[in-house]
Image (cartoon, rainbow, N blue to C red; front, side, top):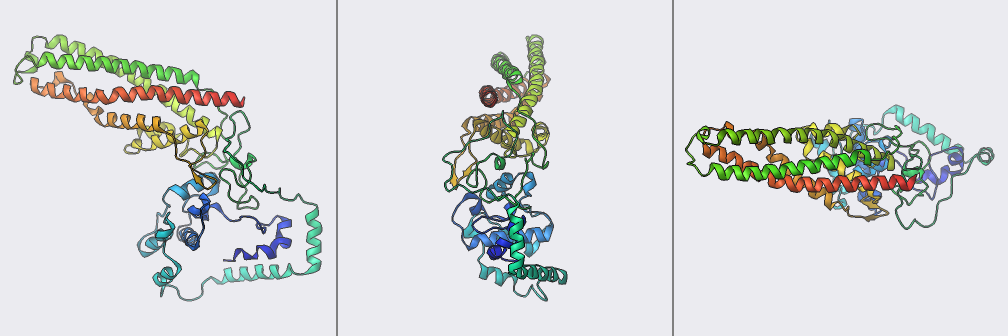
Length: 443
């Protein structure tokens, strides 16, 4: 509503008494910044179009399109740079207009002439309600009063009794230094990284940029729990995964042997007519029971371990891990979401535990190094999709041909389960060691 150009006029009037703006500083609300501002890229007029889209979305829905800074200013910046805007409740031409303004690529946003053409004839009457105009008039009077020399003298006297804002460093730090786990649980904005550190491209001060420790998404202000050693639960977890791997190999060998035994008789035979049917069935049932028990215990330990490393990552760097900590448990049981949301959490936990900088830091892009996580997850998803074959038993089929079909499907599934379990053992072991090493370094 009022251009930021008044910052110079407000220097003496408001900054000394805790105002929002000061010349020579980057100001504004993070929720209205464009992706190029967040990344430190070249800013053009297209950045203003993005900010306009954010303002329109907020005016139309009452919600910030990328969340509020209460959930962690760095989290808001990540969503601005990487995720789609929340435009629920919008439809029709208004949705199309705002969505176009909020395109990540500046080249794909409409220019000012296009915006004027698209809204021509839609705007009529006064631009602002009467109450807002009256409020702006009062602000204008206060601004004019700031030119009064006597008033300035009084305000300068008051300013001498207050603490001046800290000076800003002239050069950015050369490297990314994540907070140590043993230190206080503070957000990156309180860790003394300065205006160039992650991810603070604006100057703190006033209600727009005063952030305390940011809790997990959806829980602003919650202080993260202190990081706790993981080895006591991590070691039993990867050992049980290893035992499940041994069972999988044994089940694969049994299935191959079983298929060879059944194929020695005509496919049209009843499976129950096979002379070794009873012995083969009992052996299969024993293997299934042991496998089910091992898998159940492994799932329980896995969830406990995954939740622990999620909490530790929040303690290391509050707000950098997506979703609420409770989702580290529940997301595995949500249909469809369990195909991608656990991977997103694992990605963030892995990057934080490694001490990697954010993907966009100091205007540069740092490609994430998560080959192990991606490889494990790919094998796991394929295995999970085909694991329905484990719910069928060859001995419940009618003919040998049908029984062999079930066995072949189970053999196929085991070939994906084996690499999935191997990579899971390595993933759990390495992530456990990384977090414990980081905790020890900060102790």
